Image 1 (cartoon, helix red, strand yellow):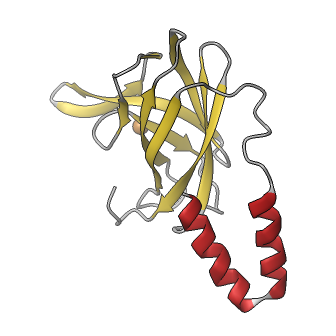
Image 2 (tube, rainbow, N blue to C red; image 1 turned 90 degrees about the vertical axis):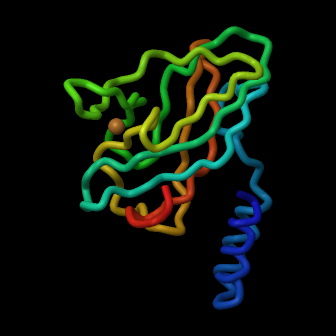
Length: 163
Ligand SMILES: [Cu+2]
């Protein structure tokens, strides 16, 4: 993630001094200071937000989560910045067709990674922001049952890209 940001900043800096200043500010700002409580032991990898083929339809957020914390917690909610509403969905077979239902809170335990992936669990980002464009990053926040939150960036992918 850091490398992606750095590359983007370098490209902007090459074109304008203003861009350079903005990037420098960003790079020096400490991250995650807005979170009142930080989750111990949560690692997110492979995050991405995949846009729907039809503009305005919900986007899906996928990621891999591993947990190495002490507390017995569940993943209560995931919010996507810019979305009108976000829900955790599970994909299930019903009457011979695949359908999506709201997922139960997900228990986190050490050594059992949780995977949000196409065809399985995913975060449905309703009323997607017009600002979501491939190459941009969208801030995703997970909240655990003890109230702790954790933020990460999900790079935006177009509908036709690899999910
Ligand atoms: Cu869904």
